[in-house]
View 1 (cartoon, rainbow, N blue to C red):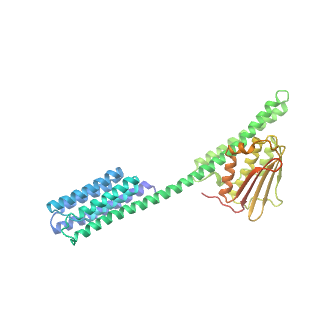
View 2: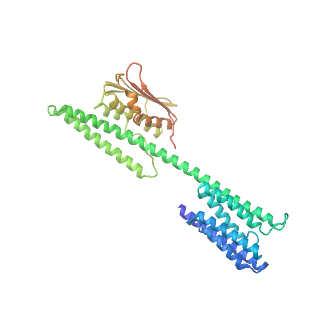
View 3: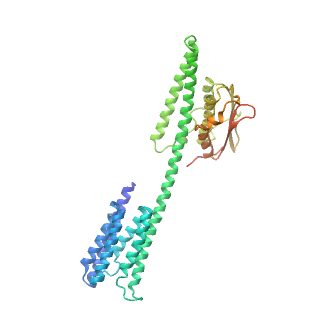
Amino acid sequence: MPLRRIETRANLALALLMAAALAFDAARAARVNGQWPYVATFGIVVCAVALLRARSRAWAVVTGLAAFALAALISSLWNVPPGQLAIAPLIGLVVLAAAQARWLPARQAVLITAVGTVVVAAAESSHAGGSFDPRALFALFGATVWAGAAGAGVWLRYLDHRRESALESVRREERLELARELHDVVAHHVTGIVVQAQAARFAGPDHPGPADAALASIESAGAETLTAIRKLVGLLRDPGDTAGSGSAPEPISQLVERFGRHGPAVDLRLPADFTVTAWPPEVVSTVYRIVQESLTNVTRHAPAARSVAVTVTQDPQQVTVEVTDDAPPAAPRPARVASGYGLIGMRERVEALGGRLQAGPLANAGWAVRASLPANARGGP
């Protein structure tokens, strides 16, 4: 049910409760001293302010307290009832106290709560004639009710804050997931386009064969990029889905084959009983993205690499993926990789599933990325 409709129904129920309380207060005043018009007017003012509190909560609570204090002053000077809290104004004050404590800025809410406690206590004790005057009990009761209502508002305020924090955490995780997905997908394909464009330029008009092949690869990579972007846009438009909820867009073998067309040779090593059908979709997608991003980084930061090895192993508890290359150690790859978001995105993906990621240079030459994932990992915000 929409929040606005819930608030409307709650205010309607509150109005009916206040109307019943007003009728009771007026009937009691008519039976005791006949001053029911004054009692009814006082109750209607406080209740109306409480029902209209959403227009300006600060002014509503100040007006309600001022009306209550004025009624107490009139009662004290001219001995006009009510001398103590009637039921209807009590309900109005409870609503105003809780609302201001829940919605107003913290300092303002604390100040109004303290002032309101003093005003209610003073107004209720205005008729007290001695230390054992029973009306002093009404002052204590009124102040307690006011402070208790403010405490309830503070509790609701805390629940609202906790809910907003949880929602913001979910939104942040979704934004990070979409950012990782966009980086991994687009960066991979665009890197391939750049490499092929450079090859076509170097081939020149004297070698039309390689140039045509490079242009064909550019066309294919461009089409795949558009498809991936359309998928991400669809995920953004669909509020019931997230970027990381699906599996890999293609088998790893196809990814490796496509990379080998414009990059160094890739040795794909899979176990004999390799299968991804038993893996959760989050694991399948993460393994694919790790291989994709690692191959993209080879193209970007290790153009001198001659070969790449992609190794995937699995057992009932763990899935391990390792990507290594043989690039010379002279390239300052750690700084270049750290300046982007590829390694960060891979680490976030792996850690979100409870796994571990290690990346760094090898002892003699090359670079290695190694990720270990629980085979039954399930991601979640």
